Image (cartoon, rainbow, N blue to C red; front, top):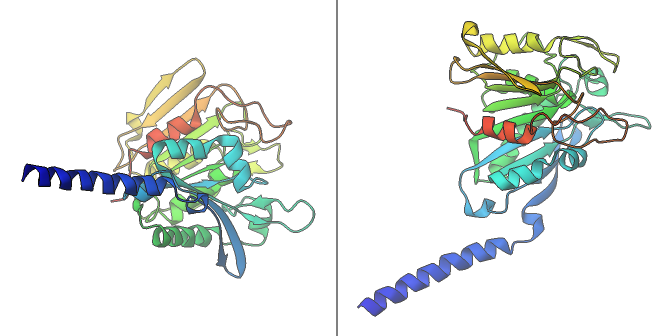
Length: 306
């Protein structure tokens, strides 16, 4: 009897171990997908990366990465090391792409409200694209957790993340904009959305205090958008905490309804993704005050949709 029981245990151990082994032998195409989605007659593109143990899991969070103006999915992945971080944390990450402009440059931008360029001029419905993309991924990849969908973005992508929080708060658990202001008003979300903002006081392309950008745009102050979310999240504005460190300041409003609002303001770098790398030689110096990826993931892991 004992021998039979032992045999069953050994069989089960071997079976499940082999199952895990088979998952590790899956082709790369099971984890890396260059996808397209037709939205309003336009072919919208994205790059999806699933973590190595996706097929063994049933509670995988999804981060949506939005490149800056003129960037792309591959550029964002390469320069900001987000895939490495996502794989380490067992998160899926999808790099969505803005529509390319006409002409020689074919720059990709997002319609974040009043910025930027082609996407705004053509009134591209990027909110619809991201909404449909979320639906598509949740349908096709059932191990993703619909309550754990997050958005981060750089510059114009950061601006777009703010707009998504305003208009898709029923699908997005939290956002982490980097080096971009909120250029959509009014914004009344259907629920509180946790916000983590990362910026450099030395940024001249999207100035922290607003005003004329070296890109040629007029930028609203970062704190204008923050104040919107303090209101949307019913935060006690008198209860903020400020921590001053050598290379950055952290301001946090934690007394909010099922959420918080945080600002990491670095004293170095410029228009950059902290601890990333330059997309081109002429780009601003990279902030080394914090590791943006670590800060963002720590923030996202605290929240999920109700």
